[in-house]
Length: 148
Image 1 (cartoon, rainbow, N blue to C red):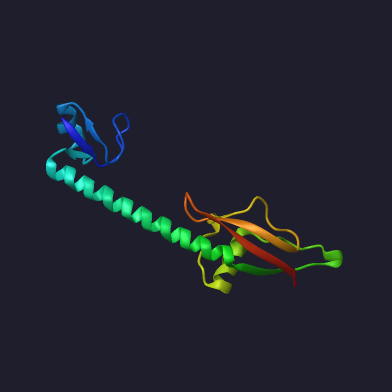
Image 2 (tube, rainbow, N blue to C red; image 1 turned 180 degrees about the vertical axis):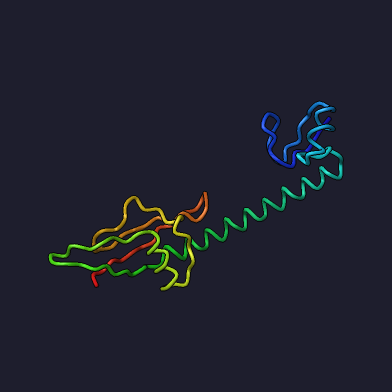
Protein backbone atom coordinates (compact mmCIF):
# COMPACT_ATOMS: atom_id res chain seq x y z
CA UNK A 1 0.00 0.00 0.00
CA UNK A 2 1.28 3.48 -0.81
CA UNK A 3 1.19 5.86 2.14
CA UNK A 4 2.08 9.55 2.55
CA UNK A 5 3.89 10.02 5.85
CA UNK A 6 2.65 12.84 8.08
CA UNK A 7 5.51 12.40 10.56
CA UNK A 8 8.95 10.82 10.46
CA UNK A 9 8.71 7.01 10.72
CA UNK A 10 12.23 5.77 11.45
CA UNK A 11 12.78 2.79 9.14
CA UNK A 12 10.48 3.99 6.34
CA UNK A 13 10.95 7.68 5.67
CA UNK A 14 10.51 11.29 6.62
CA UNK A 15 7.51 13.57 6.80
CA UNK A 16 6.06 14.22 3.33
CA UNK A 17 7.55 11.11 1.73
CA UNK A 18 5.37 8.67 -0.21
CA UNK A 19 6.41 5.13 0.70
CA UNK A 20 5.31 1.60 -0.14
CA UNK A 21 4.61 -0.45 3.02
CA UNK A 22 2.70 -3.60 3.93
CA UNK A 23 -1.10 -3.30 3.98
CA UNK A 24 -1.45 -4.63 7.54
CA UNK A 25 1.22 -2.33 8.92
CA UNK A 26 -0.41 0.65 7.23
CA UNK A 27 -4.00 -0.18 8.35
CA UNK A 28 -3.13 -1.28 11.89
CA UNK A 29 -0.32 1.10 12.84
CA UNK A 30 0.49 3.99 10.48
CA UNK A 31 -3.03 5.24 9.68
CA UNK A 32 -4.65 4.79 13.16
CA UNK A 33 -1.74 6.56 14.89
CA UNK A 34 -1.99 9.43 12.35
CA UNK A 35 1.57 8.84 11.19
CA UNK A 36 0.42 8.73 7.58
CA UNK A 37 -2.52 8.70 5.19
CA UNK A 38 -3.32 6.55 2.18
CA UNK A 39 -1.86 7.93 -1.05
CA UNK A 40 -5.07 8.87 -2.87
CA UNK A 41 -5.16 11.48 -5.61
CA UNK A 42 -6.70 14.05 -3.22
CA UNK A 43 -4.02 13.43 -0.59
CA UNK A 44 -1.28 13.61 -3.22
CA UNK A 45 -2.64 16.96 -4.39
CA UNK A 46 -2.70 18.23 -0.78
CA UNK A 47 0.91 17.11 -0.34
CA UNK A 48 1.91 18.92 -3.54
CA UNK A 49 0.22 22.14 -2.36
CA UNK A 50 1.86 21.91 1.08
CA UNK A 51 5.31 21.47 -0.44
CA UNK A 52 4.74 24.45 -2.76
CA UNK A 53 3.64 26.56 0.21
CA UNK A 54 6.67 25.52 2.28
CA UNK A 55 9.02 26.38 -0.60
CA UNK A 56 7.36 29.81 -0.95
CA UNK A 57 7.74 30.51 2.80
CA UNK A 58 11.37 29.37 2.75
CA UNK A 59 12.11 31.67 -0.20
CA UNK A 60 10.48 34.62 1.58
CA UNK A 61 12.53 33.97 4.72
CA UNK A 62 15.72 33.79 2.66
CA UNK A 63 14.89 37.09 0.92
CA UNK A 64 14.18 38.77 4.28
CA UNK A 65 17.48 37.48 5.66
CA UNK A 66 19.39 38.80 2.63
CA UNK A 67 17.76 42.23 3.00
CA UNK A 68 18.61 42.36 6.71
CA UNK A 69 22.18 41.26 5.96
CA UNK A 70 22.63 44.18 3.54
CA UNK A 71 21.30 46.55 6.19
CA UNK A 72 23.59 45.14 8.91
CA UNK A 73 26.69 45.39 6.69
CA UNK A 74 26.22 49.18 6.56
CA UNK A 75 25.61 49.67 10.30
CA UNK A 76 28.08 50.38 13.08
CA UNK A 77 27.34 49.70 16.75
CA UNK A 78 29.11 51.97 19.23
CA UNK A 79 29.76 50.55 22.69
CA UNK A 80 31.56 51.75 25.81
CA UNK A 81 33.59 49.75 28.31
CA UNK A 82 35.17 50.83 31.59
CA UNK A 83 38.93 51.22 31.48
CA UNK A 84 41.58 51.72 34.12
CA UNK A 85 45.17 52.90 34.08
CA UNK A 86 47.12 52.15 30.94
CA UNK A 87 43.97 51.44 28.92
CA UNK A 88 43.24 48.12 30.67
CA UNK A 89 39.59 47.15 30.47
CA UNK A 90 37.32 45.92 33.20
CA UNK A 91 35.08 43.11 32.00
CA UNK A 92 34.21 42.35 28.40
CA UNK A 93 31.54 42.84 25.75
CA UNK A 94 29.43 39.78 24.97
CA UNK A 95 26.97 38.86 22.23
CA UNK A 96 24.09 39.69 24.59
CA UNK A 97 25.34 43.24 25.06
CA UNK A 98 25.88 43.70 21.32
CA UNK A 99 22.31 42.53 20.63
CA UNK A 100 20.95 44.95 23.25
CA UNK A 101 22.91 47.90 21.79
CA UNK A 102 21.82 47.01 18.24
CA UNK A 103 18.21 47.11 19.42
CA UNK A 104 18.77 50.37 21.31
CA UNK A 105 20.74 52.24 18.62
CA UNK A 106 19.20 50.96 15.37
CA UNK A 107 15.93 49.32 16.49
CA UNK A 108 16.90 45.96 14.98
CA UNK A 109 16.03 42.97 17.13
CA UNK A 110 18.50 40.09 16.70
CA UNK A 111 18.73 37.07 18.98
CA UNK A 112 22.04 36.92 20.87
CA UNK A 113 22.49 33.30 19.74
CA UNK A 114 22.74 34.47 16.13
CA UNK A 115 25.75 36.64 16.91
CA UNK A 116 28.88 34.52 16.44
CA UNK A 117 31.93 35.51 18.47
CA UNK A 118 35.02 33.38 19.11
CA UNK A 119 35.78 35.23 22.34
CA UNK A 120 34.24 38.17 24.15
CA UNK A 121 35.65 41.59 23.21
CA UNK A 122 38.13 42.62 25.91
CA UNK A 123 39.86 45.65 24.38
CA UNK A 124 39.17 49.03 22.83
CA UNK A 125 39.01 49.33 19.06
CA UNK A 126 37.14 48.37 15.91
CA UNK A 127 35.81 44.79 15.66
CA UNK A 128 33.88 42.79 13.10
CA UNK A 129 31.27 40.33 14.39
CA UNK A 130 29.47 37.71 12.29
CA UNK A 131 25.67 37.57 12.51
CA UNK A 132 24.15 34.28 11.28
CA UNK A 133 20.70 35.27 9.94
CA UNK A 134 19.83 32.13 7.96
CA UNK A 135 21.51 28.84 7.12
CA UNK A 136 22.65 30.39 3.82
CA UNK A 137 23.02 34.05 4.90
CA UNK A 138 25.40 35.71 7.33
CA UNK A 139 26.49 39.33 7.73
CA UNK A 140 29.44 41.19 9.23
CA UNK A 141 28.49 43.78 11.84
CA UNK A 142 30.98 46.48 12.75
CA UNK A 143 31.38 47.10 16.50
CA UNK A 144 33.29 50.15 17.72
CA UNK A 145 34.43 49.96 21.35
CA UNK A 146 35.45 53.13 23.22
CA UNK A 147 36.41 53.76 26.84
CA UNK A 148 33.93 55.28 29.27
